[in-house]
Length: 465
Image 1 (spheres, one colour):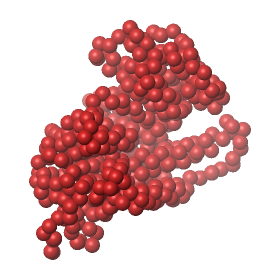
Image 2 (cartoon, rainbow, N blue to C red):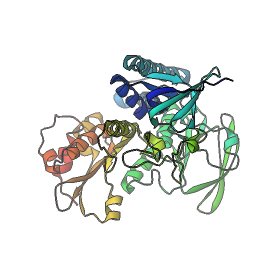
Image 3 (cartoon, rainbow, N blue to C red):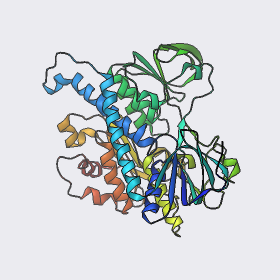
Image 4 (cartoon, rainbow, N blue to C red):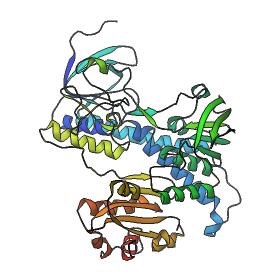
């Protein structure tokens, strides 16, 4: 097939259209630069299509199902109900289509060119884009940004790949309620899906190799989440090493594992793999660009998000950035400022996150574990969610608020919330941290009653331990 000999030249050429990438495209095209984005499949990247937003849509529907199931608590009598998974999926698809349409409008508005094609480098800063009809375009960028993201890891366990397990992508397209869903991985993705599918009516088993779910967090957090899951009837199989898998997901699967030295097997109808991510750096021709990888296969970048090749940058998960859309959006700011001649670095930035179980878990800054490891002396403020009057009015009092304050000053080191509205209350503390405010400013604040953030007054009015 004939390929043009001279590449089309752009000021900015981007591979992958995720959060950091699309913002760079729209920004620089809006400034009059010639910009092209090469995207294989998902307009706008994983977040609006197959990850954050569709998963939260489905999780919200599961929460509605949960509330219907416990309607008697609210004094509402319902004789019977059923979950219609095709309708759950269609509601999610409508939201995704709306988001894709918004993205396409922003490409048109900004003047950035979106090339739906599979891209691979054929030389430094030169990309070959293979379009769906097989035709090829050769593109060159003065500046090049790589934002190809990550995908779910399928470990090399005998029988796992041939069992054709679900990842989060396929799980969001289910049109049936699994009879018994077996989830491999007790991290964010595994826990969110486990609870949602349980609430739709599945029997659910979560297997994790560690002795606690989200094991990097403090023990009170993991204990709270494990208690929540047990109360909802989700089976947790912890400290387990999977030996082999047989069968096919969607029909019947058997997982053989070793737990505390004892071999056992579990059977289910569906298998979901949520045990880590792998960077999308294979087969895109990076070896021809001078872009080096880290030992774990991520693109090697410095604190300015520059790769080892001149004029080539990387953003988001493929650059080893923390795996959150809001961090990829900050990567955009870093690269934007540096391309414009500034010096913006990723060092020392805040990494807030929220686990969208019900109730939520949210944290920003240091954990107790981290403070102890670093030898940082701290005061701990902690109250149960019962101390938050808004939680009382909702009768959703599971969980706690806690905050670490530096021992010798009033500086906030870290904040965590497990409870209703945890993500929103965390943001209030994070803004105080950004402004360098002492915790006493929150204690003395006039916050509207009854709101979730008002709980900060209760938290900081208690004696620290």
